[in-house]
Image 1: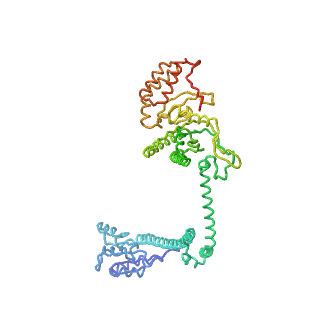
Image 2 (image 1 turned 120 degrees about the horizontal axis):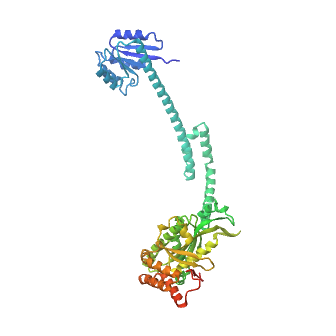
Image 3 (image 1 turned 45 degrees about the vertical axis):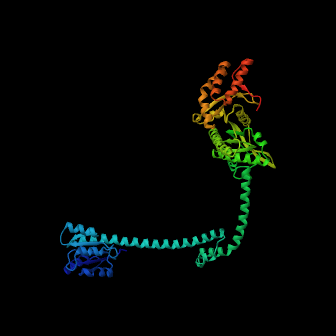
Length: 503
């Protein structure tokens, strides 16, 4: 069904009104209204509710452009009604001003009937569609408001649930909601009636959960969550004896040098306080660098790094920096500084759970683990802080990132195959690192002559190193060896490999 079109003509000349009326009369869907007094135009428009307004620009009672301005006032009900201005001739300046004030169209009167009707229909249709959109938007807004009110009351129910958890629920918060006759009102009533029962149960569950959380935290101190994730277990309750993962990893052993000397002068409680104070500082560096502490070994620890040597060396350097800061505090308080040794190796190993049904713990099993423990023990012979194997060096993604000094090629106790070992100078304090780098050329010359069996020349270079750095224990160790060789002769089949007979 076509929409009715209502036309309001505002023109002081009745002859124009009659002429336009005759043009529109044959159109059954067009209703025509006429106003010959522009001062009453707005009142007439309010009464007849036109879908199009035709307005003359030249009238004695009121200047035409002023009326356009009135009709287009924001607070006027005609502000959005299409406005076609009529003029006796084409006047570009007047025409432009009319459009500027808000006119929709411009015609020279009297216009052609066909053209006039076409323009009226075009503008009227646009206006009717505009009104429909406004109506739809109003209905949509009303629906949104209704839904918003519903959501607000749903929010009151959820807020009530939250208040129950906080032990702050007040029944009057749902006073309006319980009056509803729909499902939400029923829910609010049931909820209110169940609060006491739910709260009692909630307290019981809170207590049980608190106990469970405390228990899980306690378990986590014995079997860390990182360890569980590595074993691909969701919970400590999923762990079984024999669960393990086998892969190539970096393994690290660390130990406090001369711990027995420190321990002898302390009470048992002081011993525990001292060890725990040390471990509290260095242990986080393992986790910070994606490592897993497998176990504490009195004053030392064993850790693995699933992603390889980069993480292990970064963690070790960070640990030694922590020890450096720790020693500053110890010296200030009158205590002796401590020294630690760290050994790192890379190889295949099994990390998992060992023990028996009534007592299990995490551990790492492999000949590579035993070798790493031996490497850590070598740090005291060479007088270095961080010693790594050739396998660890090869596993680094970028070995040039570190300042590394070759130490020796050795056979450790319990093994028959030689292994090259290196010192990571980045782990040393600045003064030690500087002097070792300064003497490194002489040290490397000494090593080369040592490997060749030219012990006299090797001796000269090691003595040069010690003349500058008298506390270089590695150079001193080599000097002792070459003096022994000079005195007792070069061993048969000498290849520069040294065999250790003690750990």
